[in-house]
Image 1 (cartoon, rainbow, N blue to C red):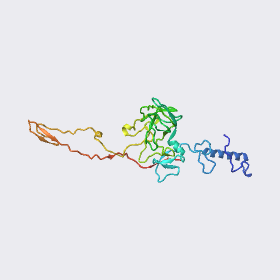
Image 2: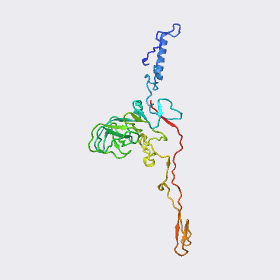
Image 3: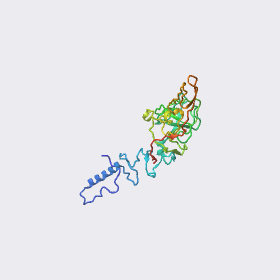
Length: 317
């Protein structure tokens, strides 16, 4: 059994009821067992301390990974001050640093002037197709445009590809051609990966925005694209976290209609027509003026799947 890491201060070992049939050694052992049990279940030994649900005997540790969880919430109000709406709004970085670390990351980087350009970001832990923006105190090399702070998709951005532990290439589109850099550069370059938005770039960051949206699994989750949600088919960058698209209604164009044949015919001998007026007679030359009535209004039709409306909330602290 491991050594006792917390002393039982409420009752000293010698404070045993002399009339008790339990001797001092046994009573001390029982109290020690209670200490270890409390450590195992996560008691913090201080009032109001968070519980350690890892059950590893470490006193009063926060539960790792809980901050940033998104849940469907059917309630009327938020379940507590540690939750907030997934409404795309911003939070203060200094107040919620752990959540900021879950939703975005940034670092000073270097870029080679080469074909292709190589971005060096030591220990970046990024995945292919993650959106990335670049900022600088000086000038970026030709081929890369400085980004704009704000929500997802705002300003010039690029997409990570060919990932290694400390380096990667970039493309202008997910899976596109590698960016080539030329010219000169100077200053300190910073890369920001913030799929939901990096706020004002200094003091705030964005929460996910689930307003009026359903969630879909990233199409290349795990590294292999399923091609079920593609920009060519849906207009949504299905390989890029944080992206959204689709429309509540849609209007059909002629190109969207199936191929069809009106089936109009004309009998040259009798002059009989469909939807027309015959001219001429049997044995002669017949002509017909055919009129096909137009129909339809071009009104957009409903394009929404059966949907239940709930709140999405995110654990912020």
